[in-house]
Image 1 (cartoon, helix red, strand yellow):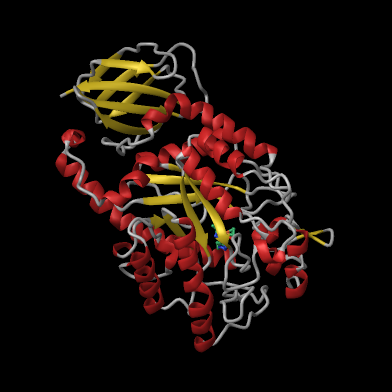
Image 2 (tube, protein in one colour):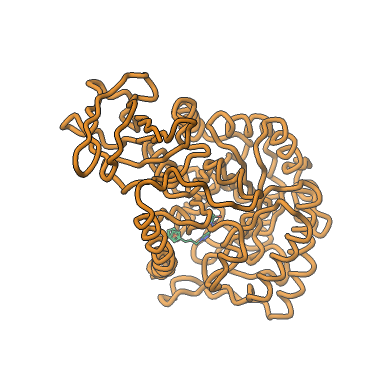
Length: 469
Ligand code: H79
């Protein structure tokens, strides 16, 4: 039931998005295929790097990493979100607060190496890095001055994880951003609790703070911590997280937090999940965040991203073997890029501070693909023609005209594909990986391309089409 409710919420969000999309699609149609010669719309400079980057790493790491989805030998209930074990372990009662706090004494990721994390992100082709500075449990990965519930004061590890990551990000030229739970905080008085119960009564009812209590939390914990994060680490962006009814996060509070961040930083971007159901929020924030693992099915003009998991959980879950194949993740990345969106792919590092083997393997495979095909992703413009059955398209302007990148996911048995609505005569068609030159024929409704005899990459083969002005 709760799932259905979430789906409904998700659907409503998508309906609004679709309206957006159809207006934009219409503009596209009116301007014709020629618009890939058009000048890009002038945009505020501070979004430029984010738009060009397209691909980032998301990290969920915290006290929940210690139990990794299992409490007292029992797998946590309700869903796979291991970072929720405080509420979902010993389901439906949750883990007693004191016991959960005690995980801090076991938090000792002795093999944590910031350099290695950022290098892995970089080598996978990710241009930015986002980490849970503080998730819903309230535990901070930096030595915050406003609460002892943090990695330096409460754990044997005693190292400023965010500080070390910030240095590594500078070294590898990866842009750093923070997930910060401004709404739910189960570790501090006055923070919001999960917006349960569902209609089924399956979830236990959670006592919520009063308006005054939340106001207190807001002024004593939330705002000061956001300020610390900006002043200590100078982040390029925030990822705030609401995803359901949040009576505490009023429009007033949202406006206040946005203004607060803007005053402290010129460059720091803010995402739309700072608010839930706030009409016009897209005009106040810098980029839109979809719901978890949600992929819209068309172009969206406002910069947007999908944050997605590699398996089912965000935080490391020792029993989650549902790893996605690389092809699926490449499809997510490419589909989003062709629709003007970014992809933020999550890793849940293990309690020793290292990435799980299946994550590393996938990062490396994605990296190998990106080394060759990334030029059709970074700084590429969204698809200028119709959406195609066999895959996705991006475009880049060249000195001579336009270069299209055809991302072929479904290798046609017929040995040819058609680029619908592409009526221009190409000067060169090539497989990006191998350099093989392909033959194309202009038909009345599109360009037909004869595929190579051997498929170079069954995940996704990229074909470039050059068109002169
Ligand atoms: O930090 C991660 C989550 O802990 C947090 N946001 C991400 C980035 C989050 N917690 N709860 N939610 C988001 C609500 C989301 C619920 C849904 Fe689902 C995701 C509804 C459908 C997909 C969970 C999984 C419920 C059903 C399947």
